[in-house]
Image (cartoon, rainbow, N blue to C red):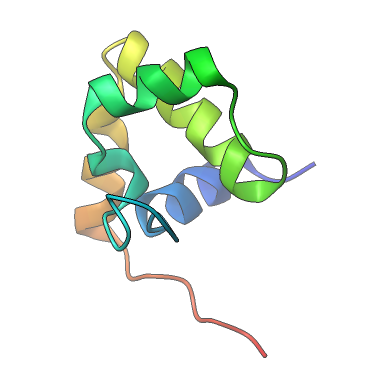
Length: 80
């Protein structure tokens, strides 16, 4: 199981890889778009898991935690 801090750091620096909001940090996606995805069904894999987390954070008014981490940390190094 991954450390929750590491998950939030990853979330803070992960961008939407496709679609209308390609290149936008997931935590900065409009709430209406995240809710639409929740109703439609999140995609499979890591991006879907992170979008589900964004949904829960926004639903509970906790996205400020990720914004704080985003300001304090550097993006993780890409491997490979």
